[in-house]
Length: 178
Image (cartoon, rainbow, N blue to C red):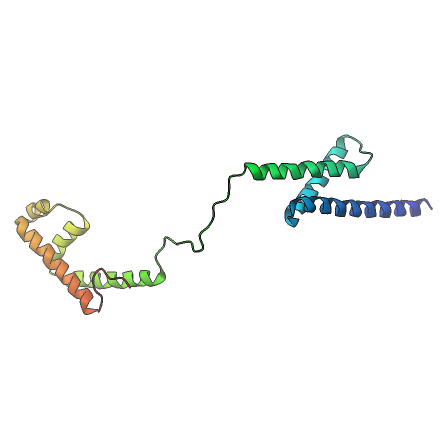
């Protein structure tokens, strides 16, 4: 009979615990209008109940739990008031990366320009690369190669013309990326 009364007492306690949990959940979600946050607060309430019980006895768990839950709900609203407002997101967020079509177009153009550079006369290619890609001043290139500044400028102009023609032969106009 003792074992039977222990089983009955455990079942009654479990039923009371389940009813208390449902009542707490209704209490919290009624104030928050957020089921997920409500479940978190009920869970935190039970954690605090069990932690408190380790150090002191509690005669009535229900009033203790409701007081804790009320304080947690108040803390929740206090956090919301002190939190900076969320930034509104635009309907379409612009990606800073180029579209895949643009990347393919640029790669095609680079391949065409590299091929045109390979067939360019070596002196013209060297002057163009030093001036336009390396950024070496025209006077320095002229002095290094024993040429006049006008000759360096003429080689650069012809190199640009060669590159432009290479793009035009493939149906791509310089500067148009579409």
